[in-house]
Image (cartoon, rainbow, N blue to C red; front, side, top):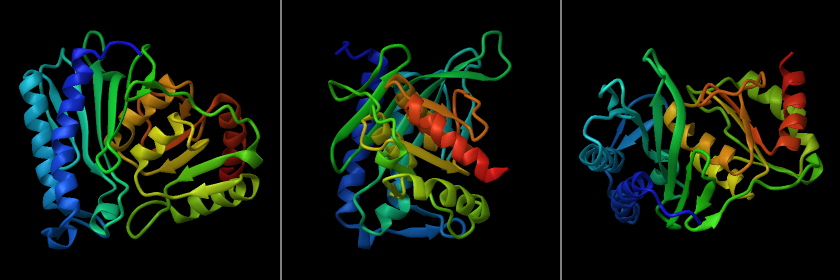
Length: 272
């Protein structure tokens, strides 16, 4: 295992501090104050407190860096410095229904040399407070679960593959598109799972628990850390056309190289 860098230590410490509060609130989920912020899209007091904790911790460590926050939006920092991309509670609906499957996701994105936008994601942490699992990666240094190296699965046959996805729901996603993709992929694979937290789906893919993943209509904070972790675990991440970018959110297809090619062929055929 490589020595934890100062940056990963900062990210893990912030995630654990926010996660401790989420774990306490999860134990009293029936008492949480919840407000509706859109169709079937909820924000809880726990969500807001977790984001504030992460913001305060990360700001103290890197005061000139900017932020992209799920609840707080974009906060500009020094344009020549990296920025944080933060999801304080991925899996809010699971959390609010007492389902112990949710995570905190933190990523670091670098500015393009010379300015004019954003480039690679170079560090990512996904923390699951209930299981106390920290998935992390730094560019070129591999992906890890605590101190154990992560590798995507070696399965190459679709009929042995367990694939994760996100299913459209009220006010979110394209039901027609998803149905066509599922009709193409579902009959070919060993199983399809929908767990409700894209960051953890990607972390589990990196750990070999899932063999593939597809979803559309996500946000950068859902996938920024996960895309890096999958790639550093030896996987391939693209959009539905096969293009590879630093972050995939509007469309994402991830798997090991062999299965990505096979899944992409099915997916592309379904969308013709």
